[in-house]
Length: 167
Image (cartoon, rainbow, N blue to C red; front, side):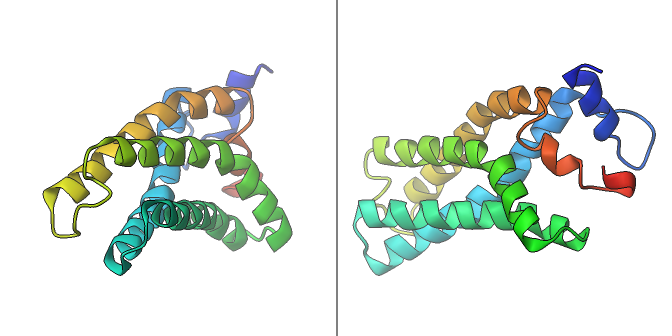
């Protein structure tokens, strides 16, 4: 069975129709983007509100983005009965590349937009820059997630642990 057909076999939901590779990649990207966004927004808000310098704010945002990204992957795996160490390994293998791409892109965008990192929490510049940065990060991570899933990597390994029969 080739990788693409293999993914269709593992990506079936409650119905019997296979999920397209593009749709699966979109879902994986949106999932990673959600965790990244939670951590990134929280880190930027904390850093901005407390007056941290740009490097410290970005470091905090990156750490929180990875934490929440991994956490959102691990919770359903743990609920499915996967032992904690295996859930950690699965989350690391599934999300590291995607989160890293998103973090590089969204933080570079925030640094490149004049005044975005120094804008107050009550400004459209701060929130608009952050929203645009996260959107661009998701767009740029999607083809990488698609490529990984097509090869049985990335979020493809998470889907082996979902649903009946280990899917």
